[in-house]
Length: 449
Image (cartoon, rainbow, N blue to C red):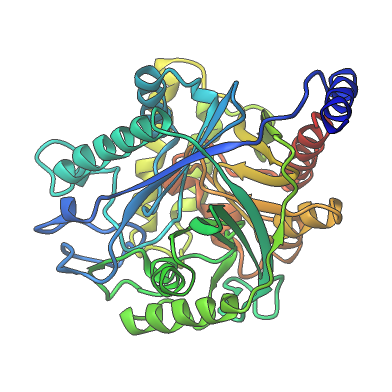
């Protein structure tokens, strides 16, 4: 009788879902250490005030690779303990992973945690003969090798659970009392009841260790991971959220500050309550683009020259050599015009990933925290992870609030394009365009369920 009932139930399921049972998702995870390649010394990224090479290591750095599968497709999520990878270099790395693994490049999402205590991958130091050239070559090779091996490895079923907590370690670095998002999200992937890897998602620059520190480090995320690996088991890594205007509360200091912030964040997560995601066998990825407007409709060589002249006499909180940096920017942008047309909008790539109803959003660049808060508020019945610094670092994305206040946000609004080599500053119409792109991407991701 039970056998007959099972067959009838199975036939009913076939009519409803096209099969007797829906296979669950599977995963494979691996991490590869990239710390040793930084010896004997490299130029660290992030602070122009640093002079000299790294002189030791505080916390190891690694490339983390999580690959999910529904049996017909795979999605690869990489988080590197690095400051940033340029869009061009990111595309090159993802192209190589795709060629060697057979996985579509569009299904490879590669983020950096944005720590300012890891070696630069761009500039003269990373070119042949430079102090960082050997690191760059070995580091990128390891990232590719680890991803290819993980994509082609053994996949096993998993259970996904998520939790939410609050932290006090971050604040608005541009405006006292300005917008801040202190929510911390955790996604934990378990096999046979034991954590394999946990993802911490927080909007906060990993800059506890400032320009006077020459130690290699994954900063507070690495310290947090160290404590949580001991408490939970398995590995732990960070997807840094919309941290464009978020710093550790107290500003960049030295290594002991990274220790205290990392421990404080870990302490806020130790008692987190996890909710198990239903096993739907659901894996959906949406890739979109949005074109962000500059302050002028058409970027021309004449406009670039005029803008450079107006900026050259301006001071900057970032660099004492700002005037010289402006002229370098001017020369590079004008050289691009000699090679061909320069786009008059900044193209951004947005990605929505649905894992059994849990949403993960990825964006290149450094969005301000308001975008993350708005995305979560727009889908209050969903858990939304928000990751910046994905598939290339190409601009700050100030919020509408920042454009309205201006004071304190001058660098992010008017000057940062000089250092990311964008042809012009973004318009105050940009926030509405970007926000719409974020919300539409998440909506499209949900609609595919």
